[in-house]
Image (spheres, rainbow, N blue to C red):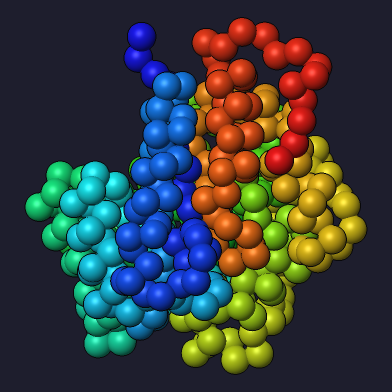
Length: 330
């Protein structure tokens, strides 16, 4: 009998122990191998590490972990061992009504193009798909044209909201599911009633299982992204790093409004704690999850992965009914 596939993307920097650049690779690879072996009798576990490139302008938020040289080394080694590699280039969040076009052939994006070229080259040579996470459609279009070997993921940052003349509301999801290979919904949108509208695209969904970004007010999240370099490109155009203007976002009433900001919500409103929602989403057909970097936990924590595997196996479409005693959280 063919085993079901379960994909887990994880932040490389926090994967295990002290991060030491490329010297960190053997320890990460060993842990990935051990985890896959632990669950190999039950599930085909696909583990995809990701890390931000230090020099890339669109590198996204939080501290970048790897130089371009280390990105090349990690990508080559992971691909050689049969694993994909992912790089976030999800900066460029629009913060003003005027959409700022990107000339991706410009010199300021030399490092970004080098990273994309590295991913594409290793994918072509190894036959292993590599991934890039982006926010902007123009960046997606550029990658589609220049680096067709790569799989393109719509970042959750794309759905946090923005100026009412720019942000398209739920149409952002409509367009993303049609135009991207995979889509990471905002944590606040990861409820069965909302994502159930996109059931036909369920195999494109990658859900944030654990993340600090759970504040009920999207405008706060938007400003958080801008301040934390997720929108690094826009610092050139919005030095205040704060949104000003008429803000528009997608409100999902079924998402629990617990406290305010990010930290107070971490333990109760993240998807891993909303176990009934998680179970229902697995029943919907979701089989891909993401554990972001920078959440102050080991992103390859065996306990968290074991709980996710358990919930997945008990609630996927072909699984037997779940009893009440199984409703536990991470």
